[in-house]
Length: 213
Image (cartoon, rainbow, N blue to C red; front, side, top):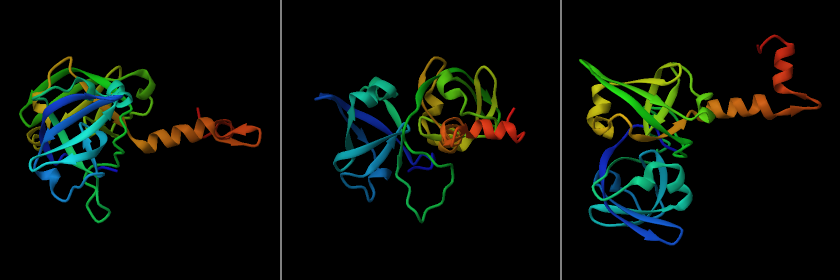
């Protein structure tokens, strides 16, 4: 589990083909502290297991499944990535609960610099759009952000602190990003639409009681 508060920006050192996936080595410093092989690190929001550690880098194995549903398949030498170690139970939850399980990739439509931040417009697949609400939480490339507005696209706002400590400053229109929606929204949606109580669904019971339109 992660918080969506990025600890540092790493740089991809190498990408090597391996059986059913790729070995990705990333230069880093902060996230290496206390990390050992087998630990989890979120790379642009995708939870990956550390398979090797060097003095100034770590390596993960990204399976073909991961490469197909995230932007990790686009990584090449020199790519900058957001890094976060798995949260500790005694730590502060400064962002929101992030699993590191990317739901889909979204596309940046536009970025507008503002005097005190950056406005980002993003489109996401219809399949996950229903889980996104204004003022709700969303993780973009592993960054915990608040949804400003949602219409045909998703409107986000990034404060200077976020811009300075993540890869958002290097993004441009048309770039693909990893998107993870709020886990609570997914659970609520699943329960309403799938949990059965005898012969009546929870959705039907809520409608009968006037709690669902």
